[in-house]
Image (cartoon, rainbow, N blue to C red; front, side):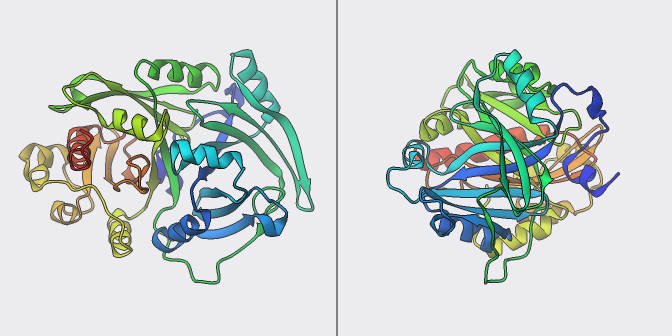
Length: 380
């Protein structure tokens, strides 16, 4: 098993039979209120490297964009410069969040043709952009809420990101890299819409059902939700999709939908090869994580279920790291508190050891931790 397969749980797949072959993640494009400060935060706290930039100095009068990378993960942090930019209205409605889950594909035209034939909304038709580094071909599809999927073919391009961007590095030495790849991206949608978007990914993009979580597996005493996971052929791109379910009180999905003002990306799972080192480094930078009660680690059923893992349970307990095992192996995971003022987007850190799952055994403990946060905010 390669390092990448272990990090994000890849499986063997024949792209030649794939109707919508996705190579992998291209970028997560964020719209934020202050791109300059957000980019600095991700560099200093999360160790991301600045690679490229576009803004007024490069001829873009509308907005600034900072391209950051950590291993195979690329974030593009964008903020309005012109007060009349459409990004202002987007941020006013949603706050900081991911607007574009861009995917790298081998054939943009083939993918768009299939998407059109299966009823997808084409936001941007296939087109070329060229500069001295070559040509990028791209298009864009609409998905849930105001989120989109850009489809990018950069096989004929050697520039730092896209035409219009210039290479840029930070004068300050970045922090230590703490994650290596994107594992999965979770979307929250309205009640009754989860199956519609599962069908979209299956029908339009040829994704397959990977997992389904309903009922007691994904409920607490107070709230509930439903979740299904779709993935591309080799499982490099995985999309869990959540919708609220009826409960005694409001679920985390209800809270997200209220404060994001609609469906969108709830959290991004970042793959790390050493979650203990990652958590220690992030805490030293002031990053806060959801708290896990000691009773979680003292449960004899937990210790019997997980068996031997590479980190002693006492060390996991000291850091609040969750652990789960399935038929393929085990995983370690932890979740940050919301990254922005609104209780919307957050990060998950995940370290896989064979497991292809999402921590099903941890759902109740996770949701109870989120409910404690909701209650403190007055939103439960």
